[in-house]
Length: 97
Image (cartoon, rainbow, N blue to C red; front, side):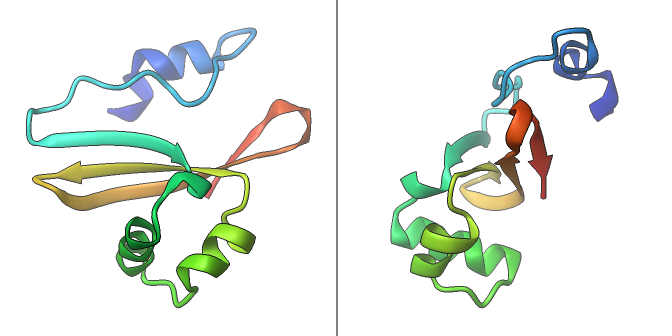
């Protein structure tokens, strides 16, 4: 369960933890990445937009909607399976979208 993960324990302890979290141990056909939205190529961002079913263009996503965010992405067998957006807030906090 996600709440049993050692990173969750570190993040909820006094002093917290840094983002992005350490990479989890995954099966060989799974890949986890957490990168800044600005680092995605247009093709990668278009594939992500299709996966989350947004109508925003890659340019609008990069320059407006996802500016300054990190995108966490889990791929299995080369196919996107899960994602979320992490947005830094004032005071050092992060918002999970």
